[in-house]
Image 1 (spheres, rainbow, N blue to C red):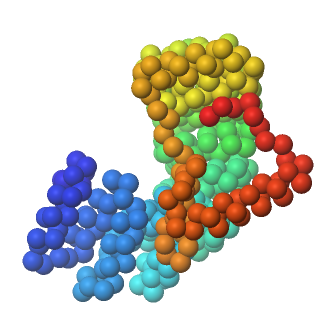
Image 2: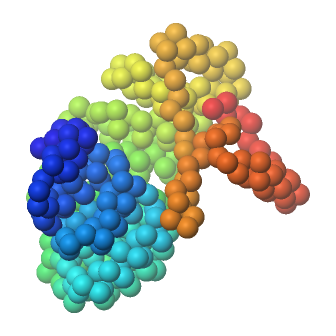
Length: 347
């Protein structure tokens, strides 16, 4: 209860005050860490269970693997995979699905495919997981082939399956397949589209530059477009340098959320890339007047079980001098190879 309401410290207090801790209470706390974005804490807690008398159950293993997937921590994920094999949980489709997700998100779709192929029984969750993995890696054809095999096996897709399929088509530029699947979802499987399906369709049309068609699609939607829809459309306008439609999209976005930093940044970058410096300045100025600040972008890497987080102009790392020296060497090599830095964007 505490964890689901975002009060993870209270959840920890209740857990620590328990005289006897079992697999159920441990799984509950582990899931609480994961659902509250405390993925590193979730993994550390999972590892601590091996020093206790509590044996992690499949739910705990699945939560830990989900955290590994979100962090892209393949090293820790592989160690948990070894424990899964040791405890004989490989045939659990729920655990296997989180394994597929972890390998896909950490960059090794081949390992995700192996986990999937080794499953004796493949249910809808497992099929959806591998389709989503192919979508993440831009392997749209593989995703569509997996969907065909899934149907041949007599397993019907659900709404989540179609989100993954539409994403796969979008990331691979398979516009005709995406439109066909969207119609099949409604007519054959009687699945009513929700906002995520509509967002995928706007992204599908926008990525290939069909901006007018995407706008018409938004206008004819039976539900009110949300910020997800307009942000996807604005991103497409930015990529295809359509100032007119981009301005329209930003207007709708700022009506929905006047303090959305991403909208201001995308719009300012679009103006600057088109040489409209006054408009870019006014957009930036409007952002300052509302005291809206851009959320910093972060990247991270795990080295010897230690998580290292980096941001732009970061000076907090103890090995910052060595890191910046390596970055300078890389920049020189990039220039020697003919790379030209894009200066149109100001954010």
